[in-house]
Each structure stands twice: as C-alpha cells, then as structure tokens.
Length: 98
Image 1 (tube, rainbow, N blue to C red):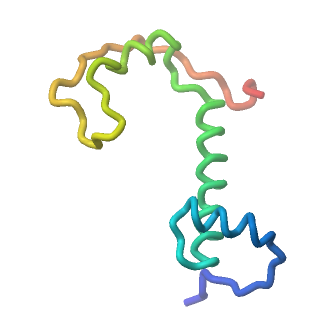
Image 2: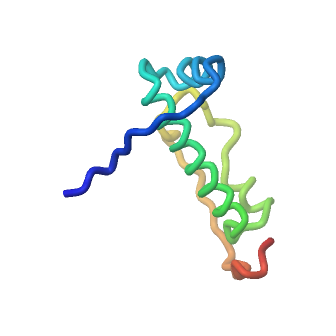
C-alpha cells in the first residue's frame, strides 16, 4: 500500500507558521501546515459551489433561515424548524458561469 505522506523541506516564514499554529490550535508544525492546506482546499471547493449557485433566489435563501431562533454558539438545530417551500429553478451551466 503506497503512503499518502511525503517528507519535504520547505522555507516558511516563522512568524506566519507560529500564527497558523496559534489559529489552528496545532501543537506541531506539520499539523498546522496540514490544517492550512486542508482549509485552502475547502475554501476552493466552497467557491466552486457558490459559483454554481444554489438554485434559489436571495429572497428564498433568506426566507429559509430563521434569524429569530438562530444561536451560533448552540450547535443543536432549533426545536421548531421553519417550514419552507421552494420553487424549482434551473441551475446555470458551469460553462456559462465565470
């Protein structure tokens, strides 16, 4: 079975790496770099999804979120979910999105 890890030498600004370690909570340089790279991949994928669109208008997205009961610090969903209906819309072709 081939390894999915690669040992390499890199020149990284110590201040930047220390800040990444602090921000990610990593106790090792390797962990900090891995988390930073994974975050870059996640952001790139998110941008791609956002470019494709969600198939909803801005007002439909806003209507689907209940600002009255949302608590960012509470990971549990609200006990009474808001019923929302969506009209079917066509998604733009990837080639037409720039």
